[in-house]
Image 1: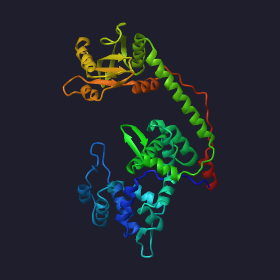
Image 2 (image 1 turned 90 degrees about the horizontal axis):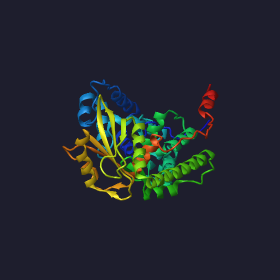
Image 3 (image 1 turned 60 degrees about the horizontal axis):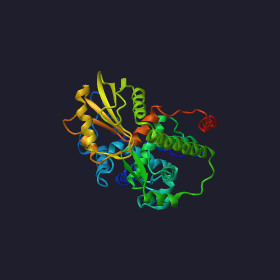
Image 4 (image 1 turned 135 degrees about the horizontal axis):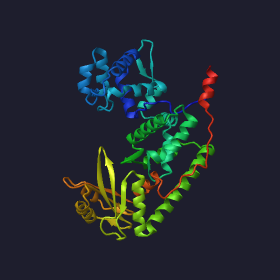
Length: 386
């Protein structure tokens, strides 16, 4: 039988797990289960959803007796790190890795492994990190300057395919997000916006934890594809920065059409002055006119460009605008673009422009030349059990 990894679906942070262990130690396992069941039975409707945001309020209102007592202890432990609403995930994690067990009297108490976990024992934490795929995520992040979850999806999916029973796209996304959240909570990874980056502490932890890995042809192939795609992105960026400015405006027009804009018009071959592209886009049930100014330049765009574009909106009967550059925006541009009471201006820098072109297949072609075959090990396990 295959020894699967990444087995906890509702993966908690380690801080939440420690709070759970401390809070419920000494209670019977049955009483903890009853508390979790009592919470999970609290269901609402789309018109009247259950509000779980204030445990001090809902515990008293919805739970009684021992259920309320245990829930309150969980909430009070370690400075409110675990909302009892989410105790089921920590309960599953504790059970999966035998961090607690019942004594002869029926009390649920930390095991030796649980005590090591509570004391932040390196060996115990590394074993858990390995079993739940966190070391794999650190390894993926260590090979990149920074990455969005979408950048990690293909390799994470390949890892799960080989080591886990999770196969649905929704499960792949949730397992990835929960484990990144765990690593951020521990300071091994930082998050800025939608991007994640491994920290020095994360690299040190990874260096101590990773054994020498065996050759993985699937991973090698994916790595080769990733390197090739990165080269193509650099080539696309080079094309953008060297192409004729007027042709660049036409490229942006094609991008808008690919994004669903209608009646897209490139105004005239006027260099970088004035509005360059006009289009109409559906916003809810309303069609609005949007004007776009493009700047094929490596210099930093400053606020006057935003003011200039905003001033051109009434002439085109537009209510919003977009400023696109192959370069960057100055720090205060984001504030000026969404200035209260003024028409909104969307800012798209060179990195975001590259993403939009790739997402909408403008300026790139996708190849389906590589076909990967994976043996369905889960099916064979199920057949063996029958």
